[in-house]
Image (cartoon, rainbow, N blue to C red; front, side, top):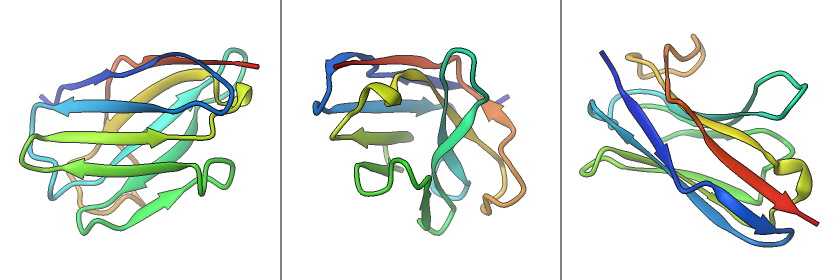
Length: 119
């Protein structure tokens, strides 16, 4: 059973920064992992993914502002967020799969960490 524990959420003013962390119970180096978010009344959307080879993808709305990375020694997935906007307000989820590729989707999910951006 894969367990994912997010942390680092909070409240910040527009233009500010936050770094989310996701501690995994399994190795992070060989598998696809990602960050997703869900705002009230909206569907969950992909924010960023990083595959087993370190390749990254970002949604267009966060590209250039957010950076996804992994510390494989610590088994932690990060999401560095800067230039935050009120529309970034959402519950952010960490996700993972046993596969190295991201194209088949993610199977394991954390409980989420809330990010609130005020104008």
